[in-house]
Image 1 (cartoon, rainbow, N blue to C red):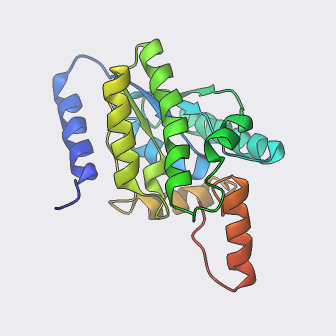
Image 2 (cartoon, rainbow, N blue to C red):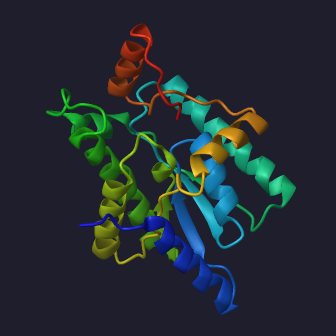
Image 3 (spheres, rainbow, N blue to C red):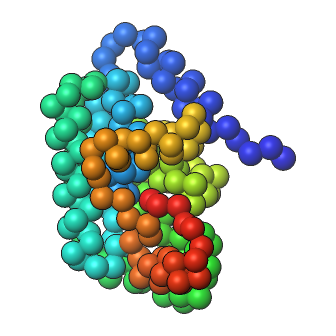
Length: 221
């Protein structure tokens, strides 16, 4: 069975938006960090009124969390100043690392990219879907699919399930396609964004430290 082409599904939605001529829809876009959002915002801001939802309870250290959220705000301010498309706004969700601890309990030994990560995706996207439904948005989505280290199929499956549960349309994506990840690296350099090399949780940090000690090269987030 062939994997769905989420990039083509997204392009079909964008084509429909461009042709409808009655104003841009509102998108609540979950963002994991400024570097990952850089290309996604550039790509989508001419089609949507985007509100970035920064909700990442997986980030273990509060200092790391604050650093990342401030970088997100700085990037959005820069894009808005440049008038790249429709104005972009941001909502900062509650920082609740204890919730990540709860969903990770019993999955501490799972490898990176496994069930613990899937539960984390669900935690963050579920809150995004709730906020999108409550706020009357037209779509909800996430920047997570831009990372070569993230399972785009699983992320989209979770998003689509939550779409049904909360009655809010999911914006399918595989942002790494069309050289999206490469473009995010370029934009990160252009705006001098802080690019972390782990997702934020204590488990991924330990894994990256192990890779560095072993001389392995890892993709930056």
